[in-house]
Every structure is written in structure tokens, then in C-alpha cells.
Image 1 (cartoon, rainbow, N blue to C red):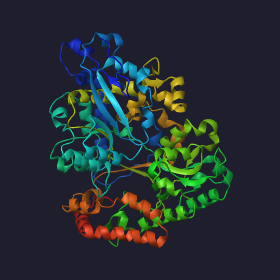
Image 2 (image 1 turned 180 degrees about the vertical axis):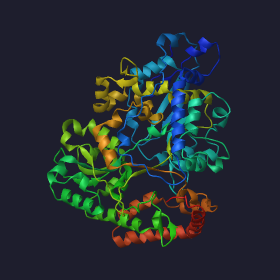
Image 3 (image 1 turned 135 degrees about the vertical axis):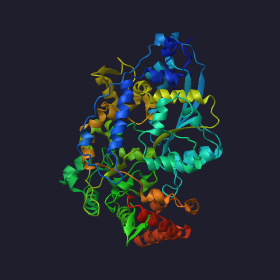
Image 4 (image 1 turned 30 degrees about the vertical axis):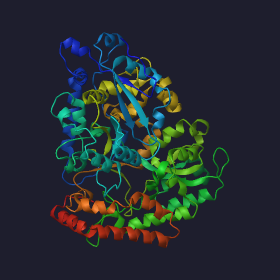
Length: 609
């Protein structure tokens, strides 16, 4: 019997059961999917992990990745199992079940447009499985949404969330802190009994154990307060070759740069950046509707104004620094004052849009979609994919190109710093009250497998893609639609892929989008650099008094306070605000914490900063 389509924002996934029938067993759908994978995939993954382990050293090391980021990885030889609608119809039915799915990522509501559940990809999945997802998206702050959900008790069944750090000292009021507190309050489902006490979920287990920075595993993923339990399923790159160089930067309209005769790669310092913005302000430039240009702005909530501050960096692995022989947090460094005053003066002189610091996603895109903002900070793919379906369709000459490479204070090139092993990621969490958690985990296991990944990302073979030389390759029509008409593309039902694992396309050699010329150029401007070991940041979180310190500091959100500093009436007022925050740190126990970190660093010279 065919399951009826439910008229809501839903997606039906049914796990392939043909292997169960063939084997005469009673394996779970997750086991069926795992069985369908070839040993070649396992060998490939194991080889990648072994290579990473061999390359890891105790001391901090640098990898310059200008060439590496443009190199195509070997094509995976995994076998992509498929299940036909006829086979699925013959398989035993699963009891239909509905889960409330929170997609807690600001800016991605467009991936689930009205009608996406009626698309052929969604319909194909409807034919195959018995799980319904009622998807809720957000257009505001991830932190505020999680705080509201956990405080109200109106819980999701499954959520896709950011999980960067559980340490409120590093990210006060951040998503990781809320998730940690929810886990300790009994609001989240403990996962050990399902993942580590059975063999039912090998793909999930791999995601939870492989290619994770040891410091992140110890301090966050397996937080000490969890007492050995686990609550978070990472959505991350599966191997080092999947690590994405996001190419964060300040991007400027190419036509304006050409009109001013400025080479974007000549803008490498704060002084050169300010000079450029002044010329833009005074140049009489307009957007496509003839409105005066905004020299500098950003996307939602000021994301990512920090790109304008790239050169205010001491040049180490982190923004911590040693001053007069003593390790200090970034808020205590001269560079911190300099970067705040730099932004404050951009605002004061009409060079940066103050509203951009707090604007909504909708307001930000309304400004950007017409080319009204001459420069903006984010990562390459985000801005390019947005403009490719809007501004670039009618005005390709307004393409945004990266500035830089930015230079550290010591004159070296600014890089995207990564650990050898992922440190923070998107993740899945399940509510403690969820019914039939095994079914939800079956779905996540399927999506995490190669087969589920290909279906959710590429769609239906012969319709949306074909296998060419062993690589799933979108047809020319659907690649064009993906780039030029995102709404039509997402109405096919591809939205669930954004709630899946991060791209494994690079490691498998499938990611043609990653090698687009503009992306390659942006990665050359801002290269990758890798290091091993613990940072001073990590050590500070182990200080015995850190919880009390965090509690005392939690009254003020540094991120929000920085925005207030940037719009202060004068430099003097901004400096007073900085000093007031520093004094709050001291009163909370900062000096004692730094004494602890200093002693640990003297004992262990491999700790980096």
C-alpha cells in the first residue's frame, strides 16, 4: 500500500529493505544500508584516516594550501546501491511516523520553499520510506531560537544545529552552551546505548569518532559534564580531503574597482581598505536602481563584519598573544583596541552601514540584491550563489571579487586556520521525549550513508544526474537551474541535503562547484593552514575556576557589546567600554585564570596560541 502524502512541509524517507529479504534476516534499515556499501568505501576511509594519523605531529605545523585546494581528490570507488519503486513496493511496510524537525540555521529557510514536498525527489523518497518530517526553519538568531525552545519545553524531535563550542567564555550565549545545558538538564536524548552499544549505526559511529580534533572531542563533543554520555551527532567532513576552505573575505564589486583603477589584490592592509572605501563613498556610484552606494556592509546580524578586521591579528594560530612575557586573551591586547576603533571610525565617517550590525536576513538581502553594498564580508560560496541567481543574471559586471591577501601585523599572509581534525561543526540532536528514537536514527544513518547522500544531494538518476566515469554528475539543465533558479531547484525536494553531513564531494572527487574559477581564486587569496595540539584557549577552559568565571561573565554578551563599541559616539567612549569589559574580566577571576594558563604553557611548550 502506498503511503499517502501529507500536505505539510514534510519529507518521507524509507530505508531500503531488499537486502534484508535476500538475507532472510531482521536487520534494521540502517544495517541494510551499511551492508549495501562495498568494502572499497571502508578501505578508502581507513586509508584516509591512516594517512592523516601519519601526517600528524605533536608540534604546530603549517600547510600552505594554495595548490592543494585546487587539486581534485581521487574519485571514490564506492558502489551506490539503488532501490527501485517496484522493489520498495514489495518490501514490508513500516509503521508511518512523524517527527518535528528544527532546521536551526539562519539564512537557509529558502531551502524549504512552499511545495518542496511535492517535488520528484521528495516524492521518490515518499515511495521508499515511512518517516515524515514536519520541518521548521528560522530567519533569526540560532541562539535565540534554541534558548526559546529549551526554556519553553516545546521541544523538537530532531534538530540540525550549529555546535562550535560549549565554552561560554569563548562564545557566551552560543549554541553549544545552550545545547550542553539542555543535555545536562535531561532535554536531549543520550546516544551511547544506540550508537556504541549496538552495531546498528556504523555511519553515525564513524561521524562521531573519526577526524575530530582531539581537543574538541575532549572539551566539547564529549564534554566532561556529560560523564561519558554522548548527545551530539556531528555533521562534518568525513576525511581531511573534505575540509572546505570557505575563503572568508571582504568582497568588492568588480566594476567599481575597475572604474577606480584599483587591483583587488593590492588592498592588503587596513589603511588600503579605508582608502578604497573613501573613494567608493566619494565616487558617485549607484546600484542597479540608481540609489547611492553603501561603501561597506554585511549580511544578517553583521555577518561577517570581522572580515574588515583581518589585519588586526598578532599573526599566531589564534588571536591570543604574549605581552611582556605573559599570555593574554585577545580582549586584553592592543590589537583588540585597534580593530574596534577601526570599525568605529568606518561607521562614524559613513563608510560602513551601522544598521548592518543588527539587521535581519531579509533586510540585508534587500540591500545586497541590487548591488547597493559595494563591499561585504562573508565566505565566497554564500555570496556568489546568492548573486548568481539575482544580481549577476542582469548585471554580471557587478561580480564581487575578493580583496587581499590580508597581511598580519608581522607582514605574513592571513590564512584560514584549521586544526588537523574538525573543531566544531553542524550537528544533529534529538529531544529526550522523541518516540521510537531508533527510527529517527535509522533516517540519519541512511542520510549519512553514500546512498542516502547521493539521493538527497543529486536526486534521481536519469532525471537530475547521470553517473559519468563513476561520478554522479548533474545534467546540464539541472546544474543550470541549481545555479540560476534556486527556488525551482529546492522545490524538487533537495532541501534535506542542507541538513545532512557536510560535503564529502571533495574527498570523493565529485565537487565540481568547489573548482569553479571564482572559488579557486578566492582560496588562493586566503589559503588554508593547519596545526596540531591544544591552544591556550583550550587550556583556559580546563581551569578549575572556569565555570564560576563563565557565570560571572555571562551577564554580558561580548559579541553584542562589541557592536555597541563600534557605534560608540567617540573613540574615547569606545575605549572606556573596552576597559569596562576588561575590568569585568578581572573581577570575574581573569588574572587567576591566566596564571593557570601561563603555568601550563611553561610546563608544555607544545601548547600554541
